[in-house]
Length: 73
Image 1 (tube, rainbow, N blue to C red):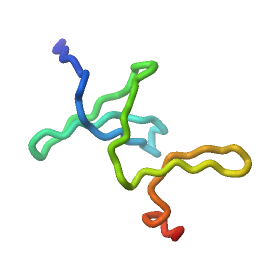
Image 2 (image 1 turned 180 degrees about the vertical axis):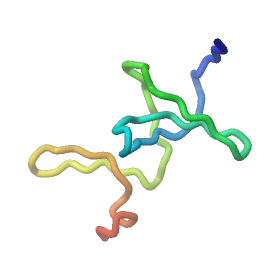
Image 3 (image 1 turned 45 degrees about the vertical axis):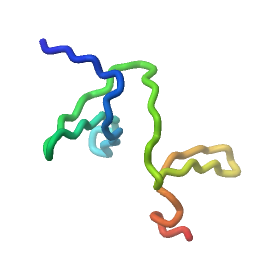
């Protein structure tokens, strides 16, 4: 088994509607690796100008694309 420290790794958190799970994609020179996430409390920093938090009146909270991208503005 190959083990590599992941601290400081950059990638993309992706949700699969097919499996209904998240995975972490790491890009490297035009290729990528997808990692299942078994970590129970992983800290993530969002670095995406198109990301917005939404809080509805009923209390439901969502992280999604910007209103412009979703065609809401």
